[in-house]
Image (cartoon, rainbow over all chains, first blue to last red; front, side, top):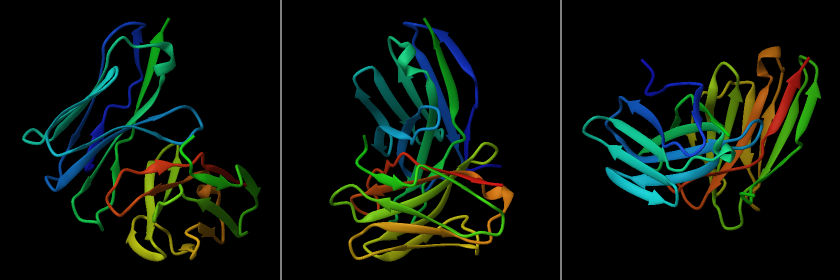
Length: 112
Length: 112
């Protein structure tokens, strides 16, 4: 079993829809949770960075962490064609030596 | 633009050869990370340096090595290259050992 599981998609939704992207994990030591957006052949771009459980909102993006269920989500409101990309979840433990573990990414396509 | 620079953008070389990839972190960032991204493996953590010292190791092959120099730039050396080493190689940097990571644009390596 992988430490971080992410549905690879592809996920296709119409413009303006609310998108929900999710990851599950197995390591209860994970404390920091991140979402990255990666356009084709580009470097991953950090979207959200959260510590422990709870919600964090930034513009059209909301990140949720439920440590009791080992489940994290990224919601995109009012989705735009420019949101079409691969979304990677990532997480790490508290120790400075802990490695960051990435999900395999979900390909998202927003139809105009 | 994340502020992380990588050179070269593209590299084409033959099996058995050796190449060096270079990364300059964001101004002020002390940590540098190297990742490999291939189609079938996703984003794999290779190695982390903090202020010149190796801090964490991931799935890095013995044929690969890295270092971080006093000016904080880093180099990833890949030797005895095989076809399977063809991938995107990303460098990321962060302020310290646990802060969020910012990725460079990557180096696309093709081994023929």
